[in-house]
Image: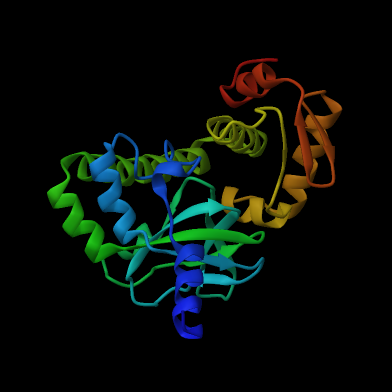
Length: 247
């Protein structure tokens, strides 16, 4: 075997993504596909990309070509405001999709930045559209994914419009808890990949307000905080706080 051919074989074996063997398949696009449909999807999900902490996966204004399924790691999306400030628009973790912001205009409307060393599966959108027309199950699930993003955006708008600072932070922690549970992790103990300043940007709160709320939660026995390590000690208490119910 020639050196070039050997190199090509190794590279293909490294980047080939087997959706059927991925432990995130129930959280990602392959949900509900049979073996034949899964094989068709694997043909287009042909590349994995590693993104180092702090690096951009894509930037606002960049032509939209693909969706990215997060295989491992954590990302944030943000936009640059007219005054130069970064406005965080979301946090995404393994099993979730990035890139949906580019579908309507064919250009990305935000930046996607890795909050830790991460890996994504690249899904060329034109191929995905073509395959979706052939595989109704995939098309149906893709519509559900987009609907979920719309619901999440609506939830954030409601959160920012109607909740006090402490309620916003409680809702944020409970949302993270639920998402970690869906991935088989503890609902009550996790690391925050984002900074408190980034949390504040996402929740529409000043850094001082976020820090003060964390301290109050700790004093009231709702959580235990050690730098970025969070233990939720009283999930029902956080839910009561979020729902305006006296503790």
